[in-house]
Length: 305
Ligand code: RUB
Image (tube, rainbow, N blue to C red; front, side):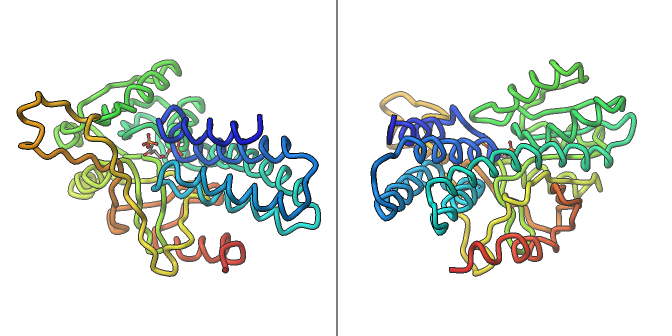
C-alpha cells in the first residue's frame, strides 16, 4: 500500500470521483490514517516528514473546499504528540466520526427551520444541506424540493435521485430557471465549501445568483456548514482560491473555433454575507456575522503559527 493510498485518494478528489467538501475532508483523513498505519520501522522524524509530504499532496488535489486543508491540519496536529503514529491515527478517526456526526446534527438543527408544506430550493449536491431536507421529511413534514441541474457537472442529478429515493416530491430545473420558480419557494438551503471570517459563503458556481434572487423576493437563504468549513486563514486576510476547471467540461468546439472563442469554467463563487439569513452548523444556527467568532473559538490555537 504505502504512498499508493495517498496518490489514489489525490486522483479521486482531483477527478471528482470523491466530491463535496465534507466527503473530501473525510477521504483525506482516511488516506492519512491508512498511510500512517502502513509506515513501519522508521524513526519519528522520518515518519513526520513522510506524513507532511502526504498531507501536501492531498491538499493540492483541489484548492477551494477548506474542509480539505482543515482535515489534514487536524490529523497532522497529532505529529506533535510523543507517539506521533498513534496520535495521527487517533486524530484521523476522530475527524471522520465528528465530521459525520456534525452533518447529522446539522440535519436535526436545520430541519427545525422547515415548516410543514414548505417548498425548498437547493443547488448542487451537498450532504449537509440534504440532511436538513431529508430530516424534515423523515420527521413527517410534507415538503417539495426544487433542485438545480448545476451545470457543467450536473451534481443536481445526484441530488434529485437522492431526494426521489427518499420519497420526497422532487423537481429538477435548469440553473437559469431559478428566478422563474422563486415565487414557488419558501426557503433556499445550500451547502458550503468555505465560510470566510466576514461571513461570506464560498459554494458551487451559481450559488450567489440564487442568493441574490432569494434576497430580491425575501425568501430566506440558509447555508449548512460544519464548523470545519470555516476558513481560518481568512481571519488574517488570506483570500480563497476559486478553482477554475477544464473548459472541456463546458463545450468542445470544432477545430476552427478553438482560438476564437474563450471558455471560462470557475467551479465556485462567493455569496456576500448580507444575502445569508443563517449558517446552520452542528453547534447551532449562527448569523454570518458570527463567523469570526467560530474561527477564533475553534481554530484559534490549532492555526496559530
Ligand atoms: C460541491 C458543492 C457543495 C459543497 C458542500 O462542489 O459545492 O455544495 O461542497 O457539500 P463539487 P457537503 O461537486 O465541485 O465538489 O455539504 O457535502 O460538504
